[in-house]
Length: 599
Image 1 (cartoon, helix red, strand yellow):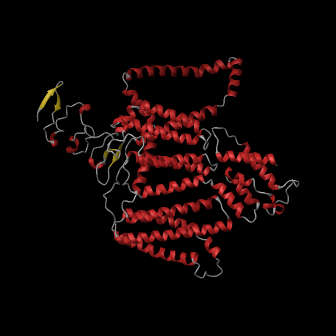
Image 2: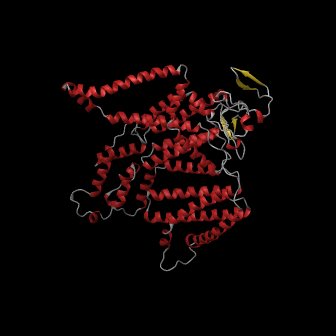
Image 3: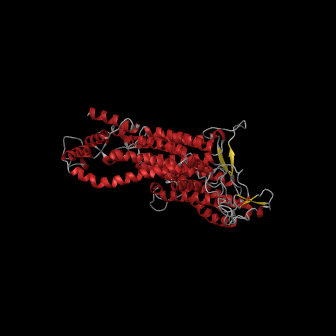
């Protein structure tokens, strides 16, 4: 080994021609800053491997025994903190403007569109500062047992693609935009909440799809990676502050600036301590100042100042922490474990026992419920038979889907096992159809409610997901997670645009032979989407008013008219500015105004 003593006797190694096993020796006198990092419990071969040529943005798996402290994207985020911080503050201001006391106004689609635009800016910037030239997409690859590597997106002509979003990410973005639009079209708070939940989930999946090669991810792996991303985002809530300290420490003349800043802060703190004592004494000594302060405080609404500021803070921190968590690049392309699956014979035994039970149950459903070919026991009618057991069937169907998914992941592949899983899936489809048929009969007898129509929608989604699972049983590479997300997203978007409360009110009024006041009150309890149909209810459509409300004191007025007037007066009392405009609410206000003017 050629060794030279330079810089005051400090040992410097020349390792170009030295075997890997001896490259890490004789480093006792090397300054701490020059020694290799992360060498504990790592084989010398791994310690000596050069890292200067490793592409930026690469995520290492544990099997490589090289564990970088932070990803290239996180370094880029910290080095260009000021850019991302300003973007986050601006986003927080937009968030407060759009969402302050306005959960479903016309500004919500604007917020969704600007969120996607700001995400594009973040991705463009991080690519340009983390190894991608001209901002081309750098995304993660990796799979079964292979080290994760970087790959650049190329167009059809083989050239580097600098698009802001991948083409296959656009369906996610389109779905997010549609959910934003549907939110301001309905007054139903159920959709206001779950539209936002769906937007967060789709946005998270879109960002994973943007940065990672997720085409071969299994269903459990995709779910796990989503939770890893959300956990990373939660853990990064404080990064907007800690990265600020790191950024200031890296600035030129940072020490001098910090020294001056601390001096100013000390002066401010000393002044505050003195003013805490002096100000109350000064104020109480002069009645004019007391009166001035009382008048000023009467005109100031503290909540109106604090709450928008809080919304700005929430928007800023949420935006920054999401991308700080995303840029950690700690999502894996493979499941941990030894890769071995359980014996297929165990799975065959387990599934075959269940299959016998399910086949018998499915046969009973087909014979007695669908074909009505059997004889019901005792005095049991078909109506009574159909109305029982609905919720139990829904629960069993959900359990079966989870069970089939687990069996596909846990047990070794086998033709017999696949056939039995197909039998279980077909029986689950029969159970789902049985539950749906029972609910249709129930609706025919007792009419629609929001829960009943929600359950029918859920059963339809369940059946479509089950079709995808049957395909995945025999086709290993079938993207079951992406298929399920596509089915759920499309069905939910259609469901959110329907304005369900209006459908319920319309169906019930058209199919009820007569109405009671309880039926009218149910329609009034729905969102303002049902208001146009409530206005059409006439006294002659409601029976037994006199019997139900014989003690009604206002004998000169119809009880129904009084209830409707109070209902529409309440709708008109709700404020709605231009920023809060909502189609369902606006239409209800128009109907309420016409009804009250026409009385």
